[in-house]
Amino acid sequence: MKGSVIKYERDNIDTDVILPGPYLKIHDYAELATHAMEGLDKDFHKRVKPGDFIVAGKNFGCGSSREHAPIALSYSGIKAVLALSFARIFYRNAVDGAFLLPIEIDEDAYKDISDSDSLEVDISKNEIQNLTKNKIYKIKPFPELIGKIIEAGGLFNYKP
Amino acid sequence: MLNITEKILARASGKTSVSPGDVVFVNVDKVMVHDVSGPGVMAVFEKLRKTGMKIDKIWDPDRVWVAEDHFVPAADKISAQNIVLLTNFTKQFGIKKHFKYGMGQYGICHTLSHEEAMVLPGEVYVGGDSHTNTTGAMGAFAAGLGHTDVAYVLLNGKIWFKVPETLYFKINGKLPDHVMAKDVILKIIGDIGTDGAAYKTMQFGGTGISEMSVESRLTLTNMTTEAGAKSGIVEPDQKLRDYLAERGVTKYDEVHGDADAQYEKIYEYEASEMEPIVAKPFSPENTVVARDLSSIELDKAYIGSCTGAKLEDLRAVAKILKGKTVKIRTEVLPAAMSIFRKAMDEGLLKIFMDAGVVVGPPTCGACCGAHMGVLAKDEICISTTNRNFPGRMGHVESQTYLASPLVAAASAITGKITDPRDIS
Image (cartoon, rainbow over all chains, first blue to last red; front, side):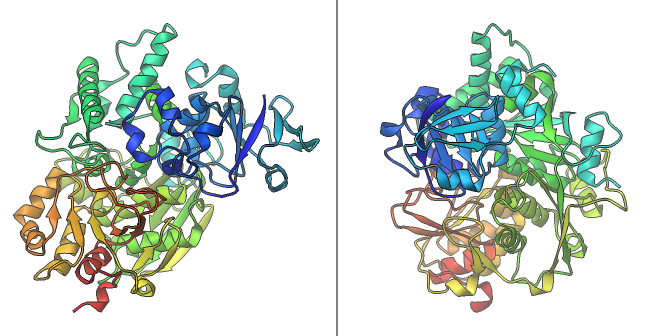
């Protein structure tokens, strides 16, 4: 996966800013995408391109269980969120619904990656290549079950 | 050497023992969807049907129950349509327990889970809402899931969980009169942070919990979500048995931790040292003692939600408001019709209305900034709810301070954030 970075240098980016409450009644995925990140970044929708990555701090996706959050990001074109850590429901929604990859990065990678950097993410090699800065960051492999669900393309395609 | 959560998950996965970190598929006892997650699950079903999957029945309609809470009374045409979708869904799949707005008992899903004894000790309960953790106070494993996971449970009756580590919060002694469970959980979240229990279980015990009512315990477990926890839990005791018996339920299979149960970490708190606590915008971990905020002028007091509009919460508010007049816009929305009725029978509604308060129907509406009284730009609200993220209760530049029902009521009278000890 290749794409460029939209970086939010902050922790605890919650689902209320990723997809604000008034839009919870909407279940049209394309329409949800037009409201992605609206509580934090009004220009996100104009800026995001298919294949982009979000880079953020710890506890990304905390708050509500709304699957609208990973859906809105996914249908905006985001392929993966690279964060220091993830809130549990966002993480499993992203994986089980096969909307995007929640990838944990370490502090060094988080500090090093700049907004608009061009990255190549390769989960088979457990690494992220920063094409702009010509650097490689190692990432931890996914836990066994998570890796299998990702490989299967979501929980419904996974056979226990 | 297993704690209650490990024992419940072991039993539900057909194992004799599990350890934190194990990934297990557990059999689920009860499932809840509401008017946001229900249509979300239907969208997942539609997506699956497009891949050729046939979905004409669910695993066990008698284990599924449905609440209308987020967008009732219907906020607009789309929300009204979602209720129609939900009704068709329950009819199509033969789900009988559908708590409908305007037809007797209905209310916020988490409140119904205990008011109606929908979930029993020892059970595994999942719901399409993050505050599903609330119901862990019934001695059950209760965790929130998204739409895909709930859809999976509805079709398969099981779901995967990583067995969580447990943080044990031991509360010693009895809370002072002016302090409520809300102050305790805000204090804890302030101490451990909004990811302090991420992926873990928060268990509450000690003499302070034995002293507490079941409703107070539900306030603790409700806000474990705000510390990132997978679940919150309290072991069953006589108070819980009495609570269930009052609701006509006496048969269930209690689970208790072993005497030598293991916990990742034990935190101890002295109840007598607790004070009224407020969480400032824009995070539940942003806590200070209420007295430090006495200069903050307010536009609104909101007493509602699964966190802060149970019967004892309304009683606490009435104790403060009796014979007084509110100085700011104040709303009381009981969390379920059964509570609304009891508040009426006890004369609480008269006290509220005499004080100038608007009493409204149960809804999640304003708590999640969706409808029914959202905040304008720059407005400041004191609220008995559980979240104060940017834009949570309305405009992204509005502000919410989270507090106990006593603090919210005291503040409603003065128009500033007020410690209940400081009003006559």
